[in-house]
Structures are given as C-alpha cells and as structure tokens.
Image (cartoon, rainbow, N blue to C red):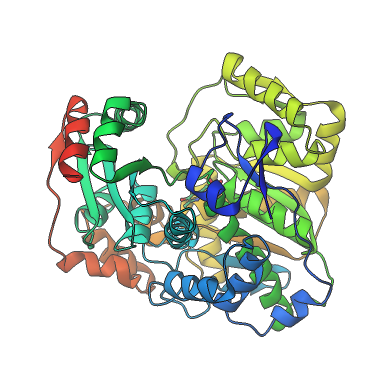
Length: 494
Ligand SMILES: *Cc1c(COP(=O)(O)O)cnc(C)c1O
C-alpha cells in the first residue's frame, strides 16, 4: 500500500518512506492511499487473540513491505515486558454500558507509550529497507510526557540515537526524575534554561541548520523527529480501538455487531483520529465523542465548523491537552472532504495566515454525523475524579476525568445510552497533586513522596515504573542556555 500527502495526492511514498520522512515535502501529512476494511469475520476471529497478535493482524494490512515475522518481532518487543498488564490495553468494566480503556500500563504510565514503543522498531526497519546507512538521531523538545515516552521507546534500538531537551523549570519533579534517570546506551537528556517554547524554538533552529546537517552527515548521522503526526505513531493507536471492541465481545458486554460510543480526551487529535480509522475499517463505533479541557478549540470546531485558534491559552490540570492547533485534524478533513487535497491545502493556508478557517456546510454535516464534542474545566475535572472514585472505587487522572465529564454531559443532553468506552490516557500517579486535591487532601508531600501519599490515601498500588524512580541514580545533569543547544547536539553525536 502506498501513502499520499493530505495536500497533494499525486506524490506517493511507500510505508517505509512515509515513516522515515515523517512529513510530506509539501507540509501535508502522509496518509494511506486506501483504508483497508477488516474482513467480516475479523472481529470475531480476533476475539481470542493476544494483544500482540492483534497488532500483527492490523499492522500487516497497512505495511505490506514488512513481513509477518518482522511485525511479530516488533509487537513482542514493543508490547512485552515493558507493559505491566498482560492485556497491554485492558478494558475495565465499570457498570452496565460503561467501560474504560486503560492505555497507561506502559513504561512511562501514559498513552504515548502505545505509539512510542512501536514507532522506533518501524523506523529502524524502514531505514534498513531504504538502504539508509546513516544513524537517525531523534531530537525532541518536550514539555514532559513525550520526551520520556520517546526515550523509553528508542532506548537501545539499532540505527537510532535520541537526545531530549526539556525546559529546566517547566516540568514536574516526577517528570524530570523520569528523564534524568533514563537507561540506555543511545540516549541523552539536557535541560534548557527557559520555558518549553525556548526549548522547542531551539530544536526547530537545529533542524533548519544546513551546516550542522552537513557536519553530522560526515559523522554518519541525520536528524529526525518522533512527532505525533508521523504515520508510524498514528497506526499503532488504531489497534487498541479494535482490541477494545474484541474484548467487549469476548466478555459478552456487547453482542456481535452492536454499536458502541467512544469518548476520547483530545489534544493533538491523534488518539481520536485512530478511533475514526478503526471505525472506517469496520469497528461498529457510532459516535466519537471529542473531549477537550478549557482549551476548547475542537469543541467549537465540531459544533460550528469554524476552527479558530485566536483565543487565550490556558494552563490546565490536564497539560497534555493544552493545545490550540490540533495537527492531526488535517487527516480527518482530508478523509471527510472526499480526499479533496486542494481544499485541505486551502484550509491549512488560512490557518497558517490568520489562525482560522471555516469548513463547507457539507463537510461540517459529515463531521457532525460522526463526532460529538464537549469540554470540561479544571473544577469539573476535579469533581469528576472525586465522584468516579466514590461511585466506582476507580482512580482516574485529570485527562481521563475530562472525558468522563464530557461523556456524562453528552448522555444527559442527547439521551444516547449506547454502551460507551471512555479512553483513559494516564495513570493517576503521574498527576498526584491534582488527584490528591480532588480527593480533598491539601497538604502535598514533595517529589516521589507524593506517590506514597496517594497510594496510602487510596489503597491503590503505585505503578512499578514510577515506584522504581525512588532508588534510581541520576545520569544526566547537563544544563544549557538556548544558544548552547547546537553544541550539545555536536557533543552528543561526536
Ligand atoms: C498526549 C495526551 C493526550 C492527547 O492526545 P492527542 O493524541 O494529542 O489528542 C491526552 N492525554 C494524555 C495523558 C496525553 O499524554
């Protein structure tokens, strides 16, 4: 199967090229030329498979250049020992018609692991298929979660190295500890004096530095990114929607062919887009409910057809959803406009020029047939954490709470009681302070002691990778001014 750009269907790439290049040359996103349909019996036959087998089944439909043997190896490496739950992405039953899909049993306890445990294997193998002899150096600027998930994914993967820059005073104690204790022979971590934008601007400058690229090429390296718009990050996410449906069938929560709704806490639109793809492949999903925090640009877009990023930016208790430009939305618009690449290009140019575009009435109607949307502020999220804990004895993080709240409002306003799956994107232990506050505990202990505090208060065990932070030695103490980032790269790739 070939891949095309959302802004120009005529230029085609293989899967390996799409994964190595990340972005199309015209700035569009690489997208499969045709979405494969699952055969009629597929969901029934996948019911009894392991998660890793489901991965191979689904990925093989998109990645013809990769053998079943390769994909089996990757699935074992990506979703093996690094995950603390044998089901990898288990579905937790809460009550009749309500379940939660837990995507945080990976090594960093957040949903980014689902994609970033797989992408490095796809990238490494793609480099081999393209006879690329240089080593890829992944450069990441992170506001916290992505950096750690990328480090865990790329650690000790052949043909790759990874260097992560984080803002010195812009990440939580736990996040910093997670990064500076990172294991692996091919990894580097460096603090940047400044905020996230400083770190990100520094990385962008390095990517456009031709002289640096030449020097690195002589040393056998090229720079690459593990951005969430890379097809190699979207694809592994399709699997867990299919897998969740199979699990609901297997546990007889639903009957074969019965429709479900899914509610997804959304930022860059990657996670929910994968749910859309699963639906188009044949999973009986009725409505995809897009849940936003106070940065509710997507709520407005889905309700009105107008995307407008000209609005205040809020720092919320669900920071991984603090986003005003949801890059992966471009892929949805491409699909729902009947793959009108000129139309997509026009909208994206308007977005770049004025921060705003309005889709056609016809396109808006299609979006509304498939999607519902809602938003949730910090106070509502906090009350939701407390209520879900009281009602179900179930501890959730602030991102997941946004989705629970939005689902509840959706059900109340529409009367739609289709069985629903809430997608849970982080362990509550990654956000101890917010969760403790929600449960009425106001005195918070510092650093890793907050983990114990939350465990003692709730009786819920600390996830192993977070508990293990306590005894770990710090490996990376480098700090640089923004101007010194280039030198850090040269030093790292000596
Ligand atoms: C990244 C992230 C999200 C948002 O996912 P998108 O794919 O960007 O929509 C939600 N919750 C958590 C915990 C995340 O890390």
